[in-house]
Image 1 (cartoon, one colour):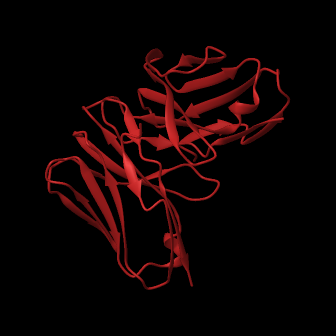
Image 2 (cartoon, one colour; image 1 turned 180 degrees about the vertical axis):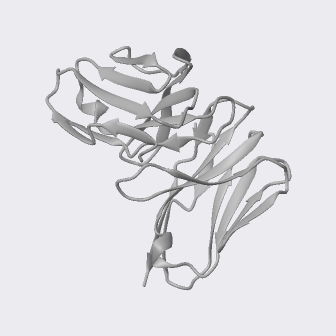
Image 3 (spheres, one colour; image 1 turned 60 degrees about the vertical axis):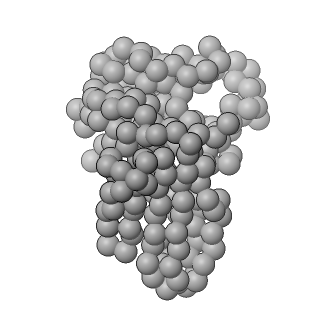
Length: 111
Length: 112
């Protein structure tokens, strides 16, 4: 049973389009993180959200933590080829607890 | 100045062999991890060490044995390699109780 479900699993879009990736669970998390992994590299942390309803922005990326702290979304505005990669959400049920990863969303942005 | 470095990056070996992957972090972090990423890109924790002590040991075959000689190093030794062990293994570290994890670049293990 996958604790964190990401959707879509694969996404191929044209440069300039907007997109949203979802990370859903039936469990409550104390914090949730988003990572991006490029081919041949390890995942790199993009953001951590800890408060229900929290919204964080990182340039063209907007992250939201659900009010009930069970889900999160990542929205990219005007996607660029450099955004191509594997996006992973990861949640922790308590401070210092292990991170549980979603299965990832592979994004391809074509010029 | 690689923060979390692991070697080798690529490893091709035959079934039944024993191999090790080394990991070192220069971030001064107390906690280190080994993660396994399968062919479907699913990332799953294997082990976690805090100040050289094992704190997380997921359901991993005992052919996998982590060793932490000091808090900056966490090596992974695998005995009697099987085809299903083929994956990318990531070492990572984090500053104590916080959950920001810094990953190494991964070690691509192929068992033939």
